[in-house]
Image (cartoon, rainbow, N blue to C red; front, side, top):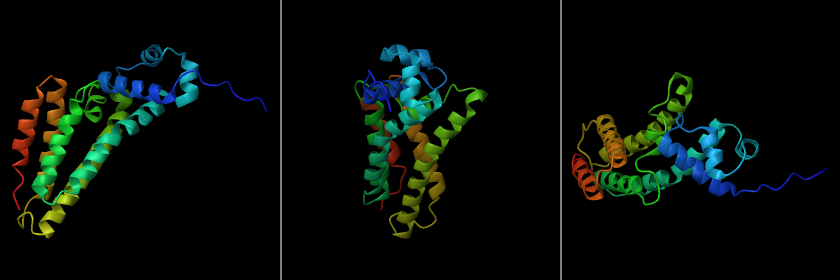
Length: 196
């Protein structure tokens, strides 16, 4: 059986480039031509390596989510709900302004301008964000059970507020807000979580 030709590009580097394009330009704003031009390859090579544009996007999103998932895991291990919030907020700010990468959050930016034809991408990104919210909600509920948060705390509202703040900071970061101001806002927002 003849062996296939060796790929003439680095798939890992290609995935990183595609991730940054989707992150910067959004799903709808990134064409196959944009990706192949950035990689210096032809569309058949791209399709052979990654499948369709949607499949490539999902792989790029998985790659992107590695850091937020690690940040979330570290935040959830903090001993108090307020420390959970502070770690999550400040670590996301640092990720939103990381040098050499697009600013803001890919799960927000990649789907903002999608039309009806790509509502499935919007739904995918919303589902990823919802998983994070559920994790935060469960941690706050545990904090109530442990006596770290007051009985009767509306954990749903608190988790939603925290997530809204994170994604607001993402938009501010993408708009060029300075690191010091973003971190100050994150620290201020963490104070909304009652101290244990």
